[in-house]
Length: 522
DNA sequence: AAAAAAC
Image (cartoon, rainbow, N blue to C red; front, top):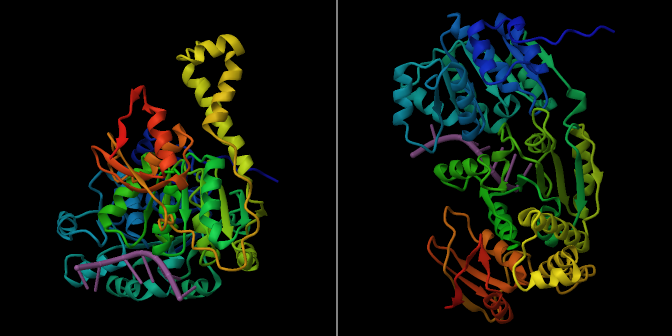
């Protein structure tokens, strides 16, 4: 068996200028799909490429396009994507290769004026979603003059929901336009359509048999009513740096965000329900690392590249094997570490296992971690944090300094951590058969007497109640059940808590970063 | 049956 030498970009046929710009961004070694696609793409003709999620497909088509535009072989390429955010991401990448103004982004949800101006200026890359592209094409603002049409996530673009608009674009471009199809998945029915749609395409198939098995995958069988609680427990236990939670419907996004936030974890949602501006803001917050948990529909399932996602969760069964593959492919990208967890009910188990098999993946069943395991993990983490923040001096304030002299600092710290994170309540038995338990959404306010507390501080930027709940849970023996409605404002917030919790919170004299927090009854 | 995608 011979091993081919590891290629570099110049040896694939890319010009020096382009390779230099790549090297400046520390991109020097092509990924396997780039090494396979680039030489074929430089020759011309139709192209069909299938490779794993996170394996570098975007650059595999952008680089040869950029090279051929640089060389004057072609003047324009269109790239069509299934979501607006993906189109924007691809356009950013194109801009990084050919300069900031190289791409016009034609997507809905935003005024068309600037997009039309970009087109008048004349851009080598037109990146967009089908609706707005057809719109501008019909109005005469977009000229059907592309030499190459790229379908990113091609199996979805050629599926029912997009097919019609796509055919419209292709019709106007004419039969001579080259067609390039890229995706990690090509399910059999779509494959037939694509074979008919492409003319003697050059084909690249990589790692197809391995599916997305490079992502460690587990699933947990949990009662439907307890799914939100189970997810929150996993989030607390696994303590992900950044995680992406997938749900089926737009409505589920809101429910899951509220349930997670009520458990003291900051989370926000993204779905087609949001205004485009809000969608982009949430995604930007997630990208920048300011938002630890993003909950989304399948709008976030394909193509989105956010480095540093350590965990993907599926809350309930995904729509199909392709959805599963693309969702879990948001983690463990470009050689990074990451794992996927799927929470399903007992009745969904068989369908899930069939789906995973169709996706050519391997999953292991995992029991739901016990509350005791969760408490142990949190105590350990808090212990580390306390030791870290106190440093070598262990400069504890009174009365702990005296206690340390008497018992030793480690014992005092252990006792403190133990007090801050109380023992877990006993595990609830199997759910009652009748009457049916109330739906696990939000809190039950009925019959509960709340005390209103005025907090002399607030959280803005749409962060929601998560940080406040987290702060209270962390700093006192108050659980999420003790906390009712929370109204956040940038200057001060009002929270409702149970009477015993109110007493604890006021007595605790909480502080944040060394500054006492102003908390009084309202 | 859901989500995405144009006003």
